[in-house]
Length: 252
Length: 387
Image 1 (cartoon, chains in turn purple, cyan):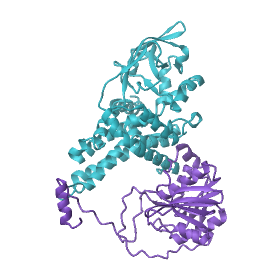
Image 2 (cartoon, helix red, strand yellow):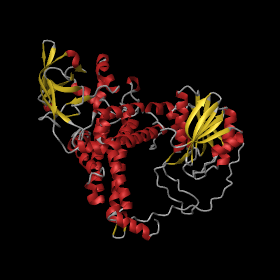
Image 3 (cartoon, helix red, strand yellow):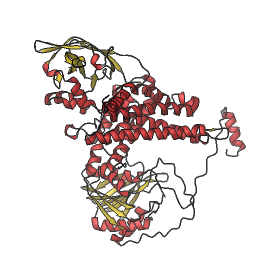
Image 4 (cartoon, helix red, strand yellow):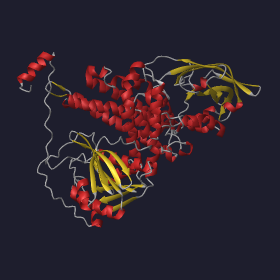
């Protein structure tokens, strides 16, 4: 089985984001970028499947600006076998919308014929949480979202999903699309020898046009705001004062 | 000129940084307070470092290392250098390059077990009466019936307590030179447990808590000729051939710690409010930050320049001395100013600043004092004009 893992280049989760002066989005100029953390979990799971003998090949794919090549190298350094870069934008501030990404991925799936697509449940930049589901609809494949456990047995996969109020276990037919949640695994460090090897692994470069997909944005961003600054707290001397204060504010 | 890191170099730095922050930082406070690194913790972290390919990554690929170019290696050293020294040195060990100078048998016995994390090495040169003036060493190895007999004392020997063997430099004779008689030095492998060789606790000191130094005593310690590293009387040559880059290693680890201290200072200047505004709005603070960042960048560039030249084979002694000198002095300045920006809080052990400040002190002394580095740099300048 071949596993396809889409990975997105996003602003590093440690970076304190700044909104651009015109409110059109977040400033990404000279900002540290990394692999979307959920995608890292997907890459890790794919590599584990390969190590367990359940997958033969792990292919990482990224759609975006040319610099997403760095993100793919990270996937290769973690252990993916090869990578496909689909250049679909020139400006780092251009975000390719989920539907366009899903359409391109559907074409890549057609070409690559993977038995499983392992994706992050969402990207931490815009939190759309849509690409996996859209890809499932486009391909007519089954889907299992928010996975915290994946167990593949022959023609089906048993997937535990993190849902409101608990865990739900479902069985889906292969081939399938699994979007992964935070607790599925802890991604490994890209080891130094693997970083050196990653350089020699194949990385194909394509464009959105190669797949005949129009990536023109369909959504309009009206405004981007900084989160409201938190008010300073107050230290109270004892529990009685705390209770009195809370009552005063009408919260208990 | 080309100043960008390659993708691999950036990934090496990122992986090492992630490892240091996730695996080493959480144990720092405990080591700082106890001054002791427990063996269970060493084994646990060692296993993780090996899985990440970080252990002994300074070594060539052929012997089980990562086969890094000098710049990549120093980027790795820089990230490791952020953390408590005992933690990164012991749990992510970088065996001395001098082990590569050994014969095949010596490599089998000493180098490979170090790379596999089974043993640790240590290097013994300094004596109570011979610091910067190494040729003034008193400890001797006398040739006697096919063996060498070692006598004398070495001190300030880092991590000799945990090491399984020492590479020891001993005076083995004297030669006449135009500038007077000069001692001939030979390097030896000495195993712990060799009769006549004892390791005792060294001194408690201000820098690098948990990273110990020891005193090594040799009392008619008899070694076979096969214990010689390199050739007899050629100890300095072996050291010069294999230990040249240790100055850059010191520089790189200092850059990591300086960067950590600076990050704390910047964050605090933006967060701390006094007199109704962020303290970073006061020039008294902001100009300090500007100078700290500029000096650190200069130190980085000097180090990367020397690293690059090292691989080109064009590095000079002065290049390496400049990098070491600048990085260690910049660390001292940044650690001091970072504390000044934090005020009283900078002195408390809740933050890593007080220990970065303490740890900075030794850096201007070991691997050649700042004065020795200045001597090396100026000597190169003057020799060119017949000085």
